[in-house]
Image 1: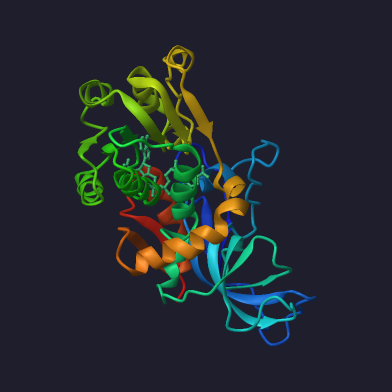
Image 2: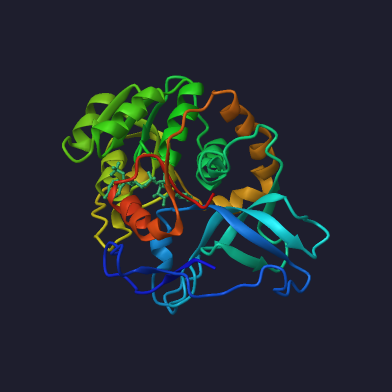
Length: 336
Ligand code: NDP
C-alpha cells in the first residue's frame, strides 16, 4: 500500500526531499481488511493546497486544522473510489470527495462524515473534483457569492491570479461586470489571467502593486490570496466601503513578516473585511455548487488549468511548487 508520510517539520519552505517520504512497506489484504461498518477506498486524485503548509507544524501550535502527524500519512481533500463497503450509504464503484483523504493508495474510511458522493453526470476527469469542481473552486464560488456584493463597474483586484482560486474569481468578477486587476508571479500565469478576462495584469515581483492600484483603482473588491505587501497596497488604495475578502495569506505562510502598515484604512474607509474558511460556507452552498459548477465546466463556460503529477512519489515536489509558485494551475496528484 504505497503512501506518503510526514517526515520532518519544515523551517520556512518545505524541502521536497525531507518534509515527506514516499514508502511502499505497508501491506494490505484488500479482500480481508476489516471494515467495521465503514468502507475500503482507493485514492484516485489528491489535492495539493497552499494551506497544507499550516498542517506541517508541531502539534501544540493550535490552529483550525489538525497538524500532520510525524510518521503518518498526510491527509487532504481528494477523490476516492469505493472497493468494498459495509456502509449502507455508499457502495462499491461509487466515487466520492472527502476532506481528509489519506495519502495512501488504499484506506478504510469509518463513516460518511466529510464525504460527498459524486454523481459526475458530465463525466469530467476525476482530477477536476480536486480543482475547479473541488475545494479550490468551492472557495472562489462560495466566497464570491457570500461576500463580494459586486456592482457593475466595480474595480476588483485579485492576487495569485494564475491559480485555481484566483482565476475562477476573475471569471466571476467579469460575469458581474467588474473591471478586474490581477497580479501573479510569472508571464505564463498573467497570460492565463488575461484569458480568464482580467482587464489589467501585472507581475507583483517586478511592478509596484501600489503604483498599479494608484493608476487603476480605487479598489472596490479585493480578493486577497496573499496578504503582505499586496494587502497593504490594496488597503492604501481602497474605495469607501470596499469589500476585502481575506481568502489566503500565502506570502506569510512560510514565516515572513506581514509588513501591513495601512490597517487604519479599515476604519477610515469604512471597509468590510471578511475572513473566511470555505468549510464554514460548505453546508449552505455545497449542493448548489455541485449542481452548477461541474455542468458549467463541462459546457466550457469556466476556464481552468491543472498541474497534474501522476503518482504519490511527486507529493513533496508538488507541495514545494505550490509554496514557491512553480505550479501551473491546480496542483493535483493523480493515482489512476
Ligand atoms: P495556487 O495554486 O495559486 O498557489 C499559490 C500561489 O501563490 C503560488 O503558485 C504563487 O503564485 C503564489 N505565491 C506564493 N508566494 C507568494 C508571495 N510571497 N506573494 C504573492 N504570491 C505568492 O493556490 P490556490 O489558488 O489553491 O490558493 C490561493 C489562496 O487561497 C492561497 O492563499 C490559499 O491558502 C487560499 N485558500 C483559502 C481557502 C479558504 O478556505 N479560505 C481555501 C483554498 C485556498 P505566483 O507565481 O503568482 O507567485
